[in-house]
Length: 242
Image (cartoon, rainbow, N blue to C red; front, top):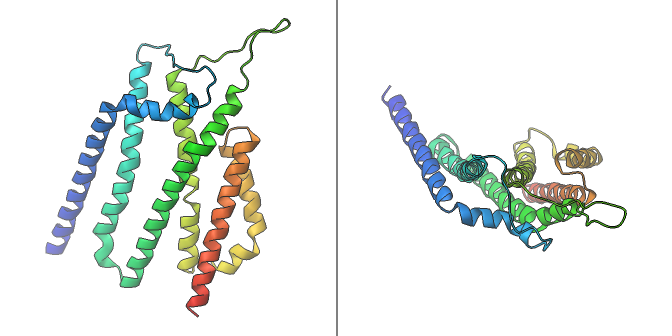
């Protein structure tokens, strides 16, 4: 009974820390919202397509965009802290071998998070924006002009949705590593049926990415590369342990 009370008290402390972290991060993000918006708009600015401002069509639209960005930043950082606190809470109930696996998965997951974020920010988003802004046209003798007046809320949703898709699906190798390492699924199955998985990745890319071939190819190649890299690492590890 005493141990149960201790665990509930420890769990409560972790939840308080997470709540405090979320609120603190939200306040900091909102305080630096202009800098964050500039960072989000940098891929657009670098295209040099005469898009130098955002517009809003509702009175509360800018405020809503500020709140959405602040919440998004807070949620991302809080999720990272959540996994850290979860590990600290459960670590005493695992063996040394299981703790090593959890640390590897945590490091692998965080590395993929950083790589996927950098990839979408410096490569994918500029390509997507260049593709969609390419539909602008200047009036000629036999046509009318089609120009972009970009609402801030639409741009924010586009950026956050694209980023979230990449961040989530780039965690796929972590699940793959866990399933094979714990022998829930045989490594040979993933090697034997890799063609089916390639096709699944291509279909998935067509569904979650915007309708341009460049982003679909980048997403597919990146996931296939991560898939093969994970298989290779597990195969080498398996050979060493024989």
